[in-house]
Structure formats: C-alpha cells, structure tokens
Length: 409
Image (cartoon, rainbow, N blue to C red; front, side):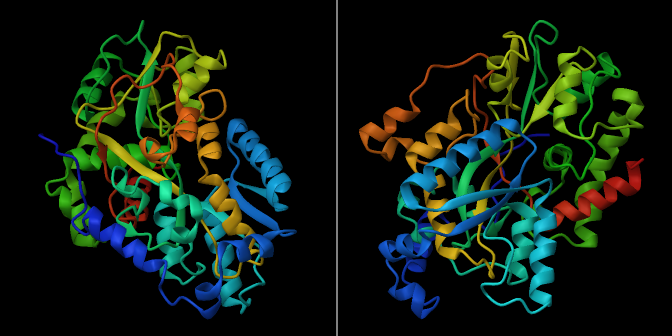
C-alpha cells in the first residue's frame, strides 16, 4: 500500500492557525485575563504551590522535574510538587468528579496536568479546563507552530490555547544491528520479519499507550480511507476502516512472542526482553530512548533506532490547567518555564531525558540556540521519517475496546 503523510482534513492551514492563536491573546476570556500582565502573573504566583500531576514511570523524567522544581523555587518563588501518576485518565476522572460535586473555580486538587490525546479531548469537551493561556506565555513565541503543527492540534482536536506544548514524540523502533542488520520499514515488512523470527517480536498490551500507538500505526497503513481517521469515530467507520487492521493482526499475532496469547505490560518490559536477547526489536515513543539507554550502559552501542520509511505516528505532549486549579498563576509560570530555551534544551539532552523540543531552534537568539548544539550520539535516529498525524482522539477508546474484545487475555 502506498502511504502519504497523513494530514487531518479538519486541520486549518498553518497561517490560519497562527492568526487564530494571535486572536486568542486579545480574546475576552474574562476581565481578569484582559487586564492582567505577565508581571501581575509573576507577582500572584510567588509563594504558590503548584501540584503538577505527571506520569512517574521514568527515573529520568522524575529527576528532570526535581531540577525544574529547584529552578522555579529559586527564580520565581513557586513550589512545584510532582504528584506522581500512572495514567492521566485518572486525573480526568478526578477533575470531572470535582465538577460534578460542585467544586468552585479555586477548590480543585490539580493545578497542572501532563496530558494529550483522548484525555485532553475529554477535558475540553467536559469544560474541565481553565481559560486559554498558552499564547499569553512569553516563551510561546519560540514554539514551532509551522514546522510542528501538532503543537496546535492534539489528536485532530484544536488546542485553542487550552494546553501548552511541552515535548515532541514519534513512534520509533530500535534493535541491535548485529542481530537485525536490515530493520523492517513498514508493517508488511514487520510481518515478514515475524515469519522469519517467530516468537521474537511483540508489542505492549493496549491500553498501554505504546501498544495502542502500534495499533494506530497499523491502522493508518491499512485503512482504505486514511482521511476518515481525522473525523470522530462511528460504528460504521470503525467497521470499514479497521477491518484490514484486524486481518493484519490476525496474521501477525500467532507469530509473536508466546504466540500472541500474552503481551508485555509496557514498553520498558519489551526493551528489557530485547536487551536480554528474548526479542529482536523494541519500540518507543521517544526517538532518543535507545541513545539514553546506550549512554546509561544498559544497551550496547551497536543498537540502532529507525522509523518506517514513509512515516510513523507522531504527536506533541502538553501541560494543561484544570478549571478549578487553586494556583492558576503558579501553573502558568511553570508552563512558561517548561517552554524556556534553558528547560527545553536540558530536556532534549540525551544524558538528561532526550525528549525532543517543541521550539523552533533556528529562530532562537544565538546564545539560546547554542544550548541545543550537540554531537550525534549512538542509538539516535539517523534519518528522521515523516510524521503521520494521530487519528481523531475518539478512535483511541474504540480501538482499545475492540482489541480487548478480540485479543485480550
């Protein structure tokens, strides 16, 4: 099947998006938002504690947030408290319950949440988010909204300033080149490899997001009408567009680790099984993960990363402020700091986290641009493939439920 980079039909032109965001900076959200200046926000934020609900499944990410907390306390008098979570969906449920219980606009338990995709869509649809704030952040001026349009559109849902971009992600595979010198370049070649290396390939069980992303990648490569995936899912479109996906998985699963009767819990387990020689390849949503692991001496320098030649799914992850956040000013200061060149460069550093930046580095002042200059490291993607846009957020739940019905154990 010939694939072209997938661009959602609902996605406005970059120019219209930028104009819309500029309009947001003068939109009449509220009298307070109209009159406030960034200096006012900084004054209001000083002394506040920001409860940042963020995934805690990575020691590197946790350490990065500890560094950010020390910087924020020193420079802005804001205390950042990392509330460690395993799934942002739990935060959505909590904020929804607080709204249903009548919690007022400053009586919530969450000030900032790390979020994207279906969780953002649910909060936006449910009126669970604070007023648009992202375009008013001073560091938003450096965001690459043209070259990285997913900084404005989250799983085909326009962000409309309700969340601030934080980092980029793209489905990436990695393997030891000594064991896999010719990696597969699409799902058809992956199936052929599974036939040759029976029991040596697998993916995490959905709804773990790496597993769901693998399913969506296969969906995009097999759907009869890729443009239909940009629209909200219906029973009819699920049946029509996903039928070839299920046929593909029916062929693939018997060739997987343990005959497709059991799936690893997460991508970390897949990575460890690859490192142990049980699997021939692994997957990640961070293009620099293999380089991280090589730098940490957990993978050999012969490991190589790649993305499918005609593209893999990519997206942006964000931070958002719930409608009832007690420390809204502090949350904006945190979001702005996370967008700063210093914080973005540190986050992109292989030895720290390796999470790709959302900034347009070429537009930064020379001194700030220099922060991002580094030599290529073993394990990094040699040739970046095109980014395929995520299907509409509503497809996630529909695909996961159908996958569990068909293959869940």
